[in-house]
Length: 89
Length: 124
Image (cartoon, rainbow over all chains, first blue to last red; front, side, top):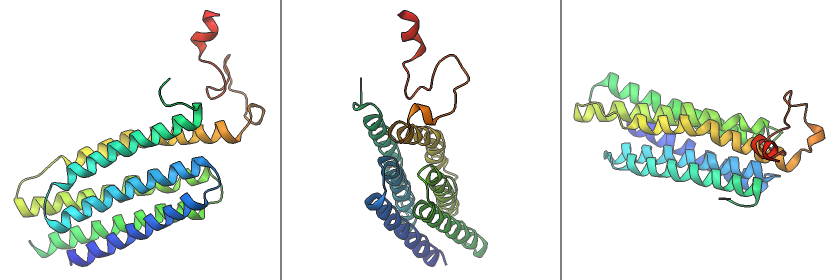
């Protein structure tokens, strides 16, 4: 039962990643693209935790934590660049 | 692992998958850029939260000891999601609205996206 639920959840997040990619390609302005990239990072975190359950190891939590931190920093850096034309003033 | 535990884990996984899908579907369905900020909040809170609760139950049932460091990811996401949303909204305002489109800021200074910080004005 857990196997089927894992496959279902991974399929949902894969489809969500494709939708985010559509918004990145189409998105009329930079704010949409930043938001879609941030959502992609969150979906990847969920997929990493799902893969950790699938493999039965707890190693992937550290990877998910690192992806969360790097995703936050990159989103903020992209927004700063769009706002001020510079990341660190 | 008992039947009830497996059912609980599967239910949390399915809930999380559905909410992740709903969040990204909102991202492509909603019309306006500021409206689109609503969609991914569901994926952030309920999507990732459901996956992490499911994995906490799974590893508790497997190893017999409760691990708390899954909650760190949830805590980190809850802390950073408002900051990210604020930055994205500021980016949208700075690039797509002019100062005369915005309402008055109801203080003696203007909006922070367009005006200098108050300390700079006081020094001059």
